[in-house]
Image (cartoon, rainbow, N blue to C red; front, side, top):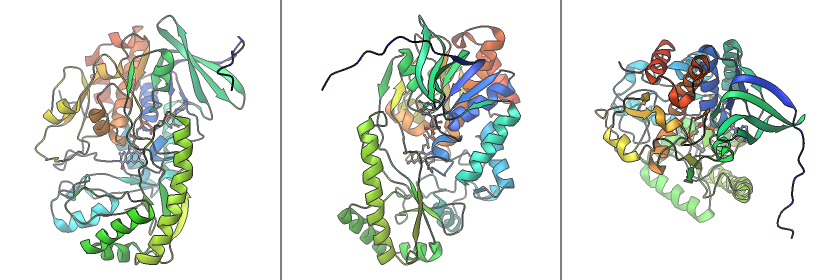
Length: 449
Ligand SMILES: Cc1cc2nc3c(=O)[nH]c(=O)nc-3n(C[C@H](O)[C@H](O)[C@H](O)COP(=O)(O)OP(=O)(O)OC[C@H]3O[C@@H](n4cnc5c(N)ncnc54)[C@H](O)[C@@H]3O)c2cc1C
């Protein structure tokens, strides 16, 4: 086989010019675009699929993990809080009422762990709302439109447009052909760092398993949960699933019996999380996971129907349109945050994100996790910011920070910083971080004084 071909030089039409271009319309990108527009910038949001929400909508990762501090207070606010409040108005979300956030009452824990709302450890109830993906797509569109964000859907980013070490825009592929968007600041929210990799920034790779979430309906969830209350039943299912090479990925690392699926916001519809080794930036792995997980899903649903009370009439509703990616490229940026620092509760003068994502051995007395602004800045590329699960951190830090609410806070911080950079006519690395914090506070983000 011929090793490579050479592409002919050709002119690329400019589709649009803007202040801020956000690439990737997942949780981080949606939040970045809305907050940049609200901070006064002209914003384009480029997304390869036809809807916003990324893993939360297209990946059926329905759980917005841990928006509270573990002590009963809401800390993840801003765009995330607004999104959840708007979802409530369209019956698009379910979650524990405020009075029981942080509760250690076993009855509350037993109830909310069914939606995986106990931070994985079953010790306390966390505020982890579970969203309806279709409602979330609609609400995200509304919020983006109201903020004045211009949506560029069905546009697959393919190449950074560079002048020396400065990013000047992005080339994308679409049904209208190959075109470019020019921008003063670009924010990489692709999750996989497609933009910074193309721009020539330094990065590392860390691959948490891939997955393909599927939803199952017609489940008598109360009956199924009753069956699983007996740990012996759970052990048998676990053993059997190993033997048939089935799928298992419910809440599972707590002190209570294992769960195999999670309840959704829709009555008697559950979702099956799952894991398969592979890299999200390797096309052969992506193909393998798409094909093999569907086979495993078929084995699993047959097993559940025949063996798990409550699943007798169960049907597969759908597989996620988007393969589940937990991590891939991680920027090697101006500051590389580590899991050790997060666990120790390190403080940073330029911290722009405060959250309490889930991790093992969490204790409500632990201080909030902070993310410094420098983690969003590539070392040698100008006018580029990075938000979401591909920021600059070690593998353990990314594993902790990647959850949806934290990703959205990172997006909001970068959106505001990008708008401020444009307004002040400085590079993102030179923005006044105190001003970024002030604007974030004015956008209702929790940033202590
Ligand atoms: C199976 C699974 C289970 C998980 N469980 C939980 C959980 O229970 N709770 C929780 O909070 N988090 C969970 N996570 C983590 C969480 O879903 C992600 O870390 C989070 O969505 C990261 O947000 P993001 O915006 O950085 O990236 P993503 O959600 O991946 O969004 C990236 C966006 O960029 C777009 N994009 C990518 N490349 C391009 C391109 N070249 N051109 C244009 N657009 C592009 C994508 O289509 C997508 O919309 C889970 C993840 C997986 C995969």
